[in-house]
Image (cartoon, rainbow, N blue to C red; front, side, top):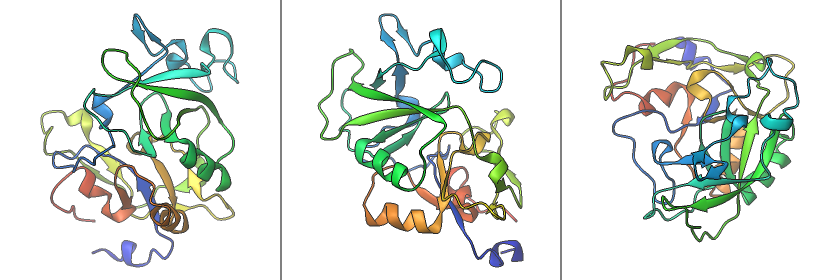
Length: 232
């Protein structure tokens, strides 16, 4: 493996489902493609907030772009829901109440709106869960706080005909000097449904047994997209 990896003494990690054909589905964690976030059930619609463009529309979002206080998270009817974190589109993340408290304790306290999530099945019926859930809608991001080093590009084997689905990976991603954050919300396409964090935070997530998609070190993230390790 390239020395660019070997010299990385401050590994960064990501909680990321990826696009791998052989991604192992976890019990209690719905796949991104199985779910919807909805403001209304009839008609099914995410709401006007979903087309809000950070940096273009007025901030903070108000009026028709305001995030609702309650929102629906639709999952397949046969899913048992136990997760603590799952990523979604429109710059949102879905987290359990316990996970939200953890994020706040780790310093993730700004730049997002919060809605209480009602978990429903395809028929719009409430699904009983043991945990309370929230949807976090981010509209400011931490890309400028990170160094995206060692770029490689991979295309999921399941989608070789869709060259537009080539993803950029950064096996030697680092925090910029002087930055003391531990958890990052990144707009970059590869990470816009994930959290990025330090090894210290990774260890705490494992210790607390939070349930979610796979956690990858940046030099291992290729496993979420392709079967064969790329050349660095």
